[in-house]
Image 1 (cartoon, rainbow, N blue to C red):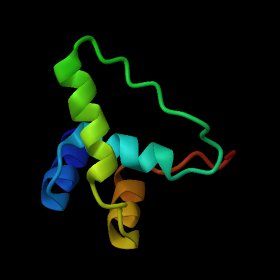
Image 2 (cartoon, one colour; image 1 turned 120 degrees about the vertical axis):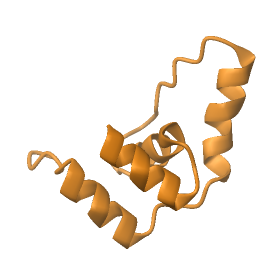
Image 3 (cartoon, rainbow, N blue to C red; image 1 turned 180 degrees about the horizontal axis):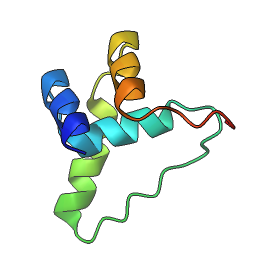
Image 4 (spheres, one colour; image 1 turned 90 degrees about the vertical axis):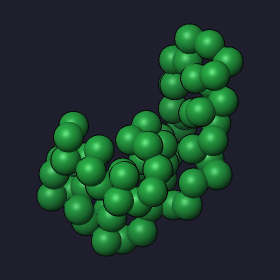
Length: 72
């Protein structure tokens, strides 16, 4: 988590934005459940949609920290 948080901060966005952008780019994902408990959290999660898509070098760095499941 700490390594992913560093990657997100280097990308210029909070970790939950990186997580949402990462999961939504996958073709096998139809939706992301965000579980916001209040309007502020919902607004923050929705702001992730304004973040740029993770570039290939960022995705490679994520894969080094958390290797993808080979079954997918």
